[in-house]
Amino acid sequence: MTSERTATLSWDREEKKQDLPILSGSIGPDVIDIRSLSKTGMLTYDPGFMSTASCTSRITYIDGDAGVLLYRGYPIEQVAEKCDFLEVCYLILNGELPNGQQMAAFVKNVTLHTMVHDQLNNFFKGFRRDAHPMAVMVGVVGALSAFYHDSLDITSETDRKISAIRLVAKVPTIVAMCYKYTIGQPFMYPRNNLAYVENFMRMMLSTPCENFVANPVLVRALDRILILHADHEQNASTSTVRLAGSSGANPFACIAAGIACLWGAAHGGANEAVLNMLEEIGDVSRIGAYINRAKDRSDPFKLMGFGHRVYKNFDPRAKIMYTTCHEVLDELGLGNDRLFKLAMELERIALEDDYFIEKKLYPNVDFYSGIVLRALGIPTTMFTAIFAMARTVGWIAHWNEMITDPEQKIGRPRQLYQGHPRRDVTPIATR
Image 1 (spheres, rainbow, N blue to C red):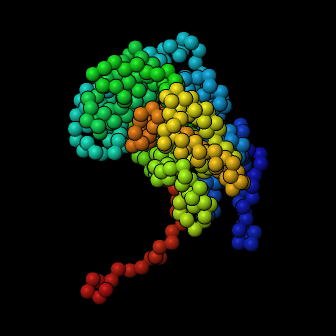
Image 2: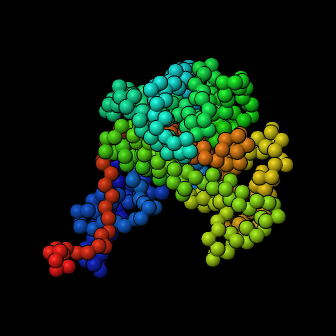
Image 3: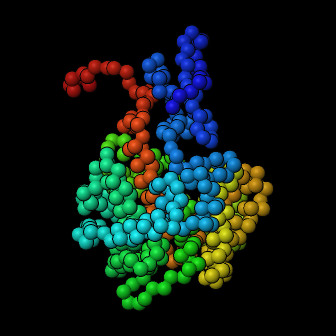
């Protein structure tokens, strides 16, 4: 990358100056290249990397002010309407949408890798039955490198592609196994005659006692949830995958690191928090009191599922999930369910309240996805695991992009040290 424009940094009353190149992307804000700054003995300070571009990427673009989300340049609204999840996986991994022949080959490849090594079943026996599914998932996904070590040469394009397919194919099987283990039911093996999402729903929700027939409305709803969560630029878990991968760690270990990061309540647990909040509110008659609490700055209560750290106007994914949510509730006849009535009334009041309109606190994707997942019969403890299943393709695409980036270096953030300066150790008897 070259640039003819520069920004000039001056300090010590402008006696010292440093010219820094300004780089431009295809869209989005320009960035100041500060790589040469260390030669001056100065560093930048940016907690949370809120003003720092840590890499170049061609995968996902977000404009939070305009409410824009693009996968490889395609608006999320079009992708969610016209594609299924595996098409989106192909797009994210390869950069272009597949034609019919490419799609058929990709689906077949994924389908033939959905089984996991039989000895992997033994790992589950080491976990307590009441362990959180994410705790189990971190361990089992990380352990894949012990079973599929035939394709761990990260310098090999072929090995990287095989690992990507294995992760996209096997993580749904592992997620379903995590759930079955915690409720004491037998594992349901994948079926090659079923489509990706339908296959997952069968592994999650069926038993050997009866045949499972998926409702197409519910299958499409879950498919959309996976599409909307497939990638979201350089978020905490994606950055974790990139940082772990920068050391040369294998892709299974890197994805396990991403899962561990996603488990954090501030990242992947938002839709679960929405359901917990609705349970706390309890009844439609109490919504007004909780709305007032949310407006009270002295009250720590927050209205979960409203507003977004990135999207300052509206979350484009929420519009899609709004429609999907109502399709599911209508299909299942859940309009009179206590929790769903509560959610819909909370949504109505918040959308009409001047405070929320002024602050642009619109319902986000987590508000609706939690409601949909509950309607599908999926317990709240599994919400983040399904999020991880969706995000796996984004993680592995970013990992692969980082590995092939000629400017990639091992991650090594610097610090602003505020501890003691050098001091001498005195003998213990004199302390």
